[in-house]
Image (cartoon, rainbow, N blue to C red; front, top):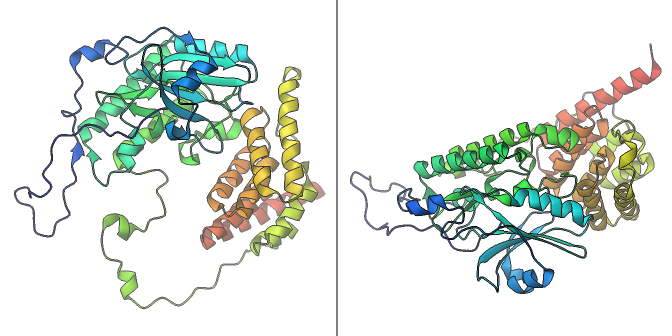
Length: 457
């Protein structure tokens, strides 16, 4: 949700003065965000709006929100959710009340039914709590779907926790974040809104008093089916990867990832920074003679055509195999009721079809866009779509994204050799050769098992 470029208020620091007992040459002291410095006035705790009462939920016109955000100007974008949930959040100010607002703009296909979107927004809009950045409005104008919330001017937990070069967060403040967010989640649960979508450090915002609040945008699904997680797999609950559904247990899992963020101050999984760099110590390996190159591990089992292509990282051959196998391996991965075969299904299959044409014609960027629409909007889960999108990411030199898609294909179809093969290629691209070989071996074992089962006793 919305946040501008300002930072949390801090007191005056004197980095040039060394504290007593500091040894010469010790690392410089980094000022930290203090609990006392950010102490909110007691009166604000009684108000959900932190200084003014929160208005009742209102329906805004598109013209009002366009004017408030400067025509949805690029410079007013404060959040982009990424390829899996390509929604934008803008900061703005209402002309009528001069109230600062955050406006979330959904993709056009996310909520085709305006009535369903309005009902969801009204449900979230009933919630009012001082630990929430509350929802104050929505807009259903033509194909446009937007949410309007209180604007939090002091950035996100992610910014203050992960970008700590100049200023860290004190432990007392980290404890406050955990406690306040737990309060917000408990309130939502008791009010009949137990599900929170995509809970992570970017959903925790700081208000004008420096108090942490939970974004209300996570209480609203990214699409009518709630099939979008914009964060990486480390934050994504296992049950969501299996069936694309968020449960109350999913929220507990995601809250645990926030606690891990608060404890470690690191993103999970951590970036590929060597340990010696993170600790600030010399790299002794550079001073030693480089070790003799080790032979690359080889698979232990004979490989199929797909396995051979993956072992030599022949992306063109992998593409030809995925095109020829089509959706043969998707049988049994979807169980759809009659009611689901509606316009929603036609839209979803149309997106997949356009992705298939682009994939066949090697227009990999277009294929990624179309397959992403299929994954985000639909109620179907397709391991083949994830495998194809994984290859598209590899073709576009995006091995991290390719690995995520291959892992999701495995979650949908745990014994599918292709999912393991695609992981092997992505791991090789990431220079993780030993892991890549392990994946090749697992894939070939699964293929052997499949062939034995097909031949019978």
